[in-house]
Length: 476
Image (cartoon, rainbow, N blue to C red; front, side, top):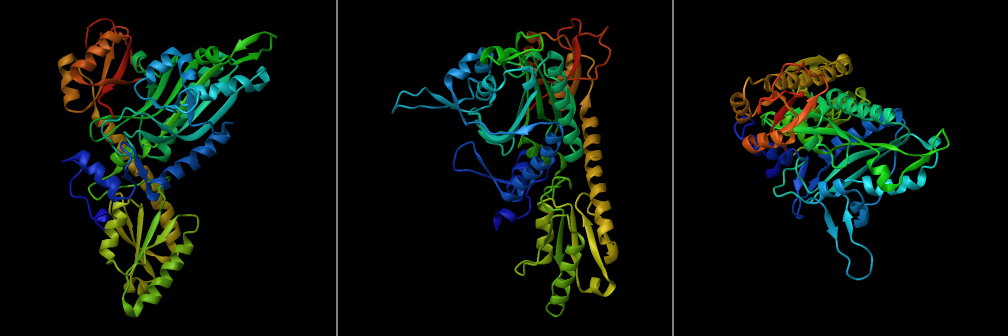
């Protein structure tokens, strides 16, 4: 039972070790015998299932349909798009075949090429557009040197949407629509505040015209990319011959987007919401909303358990667990469920039977109150909404306090050293951006959509005329 012991480090003293202990001891994930890979345990996968369930509803509302494409990608497909293959060169895992004449295949690091081969056969006319397809899948990127569960693993789970449009305008609209869908999803469902904007040219997706992103900032002082939406223009359409007969009876190349988020979201919410007791899960994506812990004594055992079942029945529609294990003390159970981040704990003992009440404890603040049985449902409804909002408010406050605005490059360097999210003007020159990275190890994370007046601003590093303001920070 060592895995269920409490945390041995504090979040603000050894963040990396704290994070690993939370993920493992709260039974979200575990290390695998396969180097660089992880096992997602039921509690962690339950979060991912809820993310899928909620986002699938939204995808259907947007007219996106789910499909599935092969895990393996022929080498010739990669070679068709030069910048794409170069961008993934170091990350691709290849399968060598020596028993026949088949060409070498890769385990997908992303699915553009294999999907677009099919698209080239499916699309014939403008009437076939827009084509809106998403797949939930696993991908492999073989660059990992040190495994960090959910954040850096060779294999991870994600969703990837791939769309084809008739016009450049529709393609732009889809790119922007999805990055804002991601922002709304993260903030409303995961209670993670993010900054939405574009990537710089050097940080954009290989083969894209431009990349949009949502970036969060963790208490470790690092930015975490929570989702990206890419405008691919006609680059891949020309490579894979995705053409259609237009309204003018002429042949045209399609305009494309791709967009996705991954199980990295789970790691991000652990870091942002967790505390020294373990996880704190947002109610809208938690696998368990309420745990009921009966306080059991021999004389009142049957009555207390009966009451627990009655309370559970009152909470129909929520995921509720009754922890009636008799080989652990109530206090041990309290600690375990706090570690697992369940939003609400309900305690029922003999004294509560006499008063026709339960004791209700909220995980985010630890506040405890006596609640009459008749009002249990209303109280849970209210508390879950309040917990969801409170988690977002706290995370938003942290993000805002983490942003610094330097007046010169010395202050810029100090901000990075102090693990802040540094907001500064930049000239957009890739050489200048690379120099900043070499000097500070920080990268340009996001050019926010909401730009400040840069008309008279100068680049924080080289002093040339600024083109935009951008957030810099260290990242996972």
